[in-house]
Length: 465
Image 1: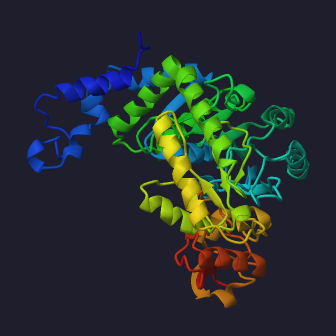
Image 2: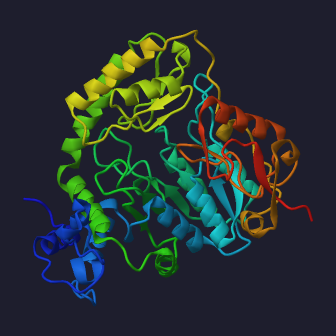
Image 3: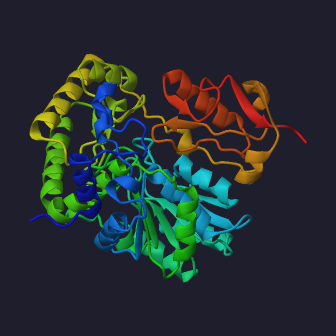
């Protein structure tokens, strides 16, 4: 018998019989408006719950999620892991405080630094020379940062990384806790972790004090569904709740919230079964793709992750991506050297076999002279910070030609996307190597996100004072 899903069940009951509503949303799921998507939209207040929230269906759903992940508190968000990351930034410190942050951060963590006025002390991952991709962050790197910033208020890491790499969190948590700080993890790409014995444990089970994860990425929630979880030993839970509410919409989609509740229920009831099948599918795909000459199949920490290196085949990733899309296959990410297709509990033997066959055919069709992989500018170049993120955000700015931008302080972010990790952030010096690396990636076809001129012919810089 399925476990309880109080919010999802309440949302389903409302949609079966909404009555005659005189509340928002304005479309009222009216079939006469001609858009079938509207039928799935409903509010939390005067929808899944009553106008005073007396049924407490959201609170009960969040309590069940907290229990499943082993947290003291859980909050459901309709704004992705962005909301959770920024909540933790506002929770852990005040303007001027330092925090230790992985340079593999998502741009939402950087936005949290701006909102909270925190000053980052960067830590960097190791880089695999065979692929140019970022690996784990060594405990020694954390130890170095703790020594350089003993006054820091906490440590923010991204675990797993976009390509499925996971650091030694037990060792890192020991170091961070010994220094009297909380360890906070952006686990956006690892909502499934901990729900099968062959998978790594989730971050809370490995010593973290707070965890943010996207239930829509590797689980089954609607897009934007996410949860943020915390324990109270080193996290001020009252401030955590206040920060969450400060950033939260007052009109959340009950459909998105309920989908996180249902995703939690699915993991509680069928996690080992579904994830076991996914692990087997990915293992088989890895075996078959490893037989393609020159194609590198990355050995990720997460056995559900499939990351492919193209440099040894000579094929260009953007051409391979175009061929895949023409065949109806849409990978999550492609750049010149790498393909990342996301395989989840929703996949089957048929979908994964088709992926393998189409990738194999596309690589063979575009095979060329093998080359050395090029490390992304995201993790191959060190940042030089001149202004704190918040100071840079509010500083006067101007647009200049790229050649005149070298040596100036950036007022905007530039991040090869996906995964949206900043190579250049507001407050950092625009150096010649960083500019050339970003321009080369743009010229090669990579999307450079979050900057106003994605060609990088011009940049927005802080006005000289």
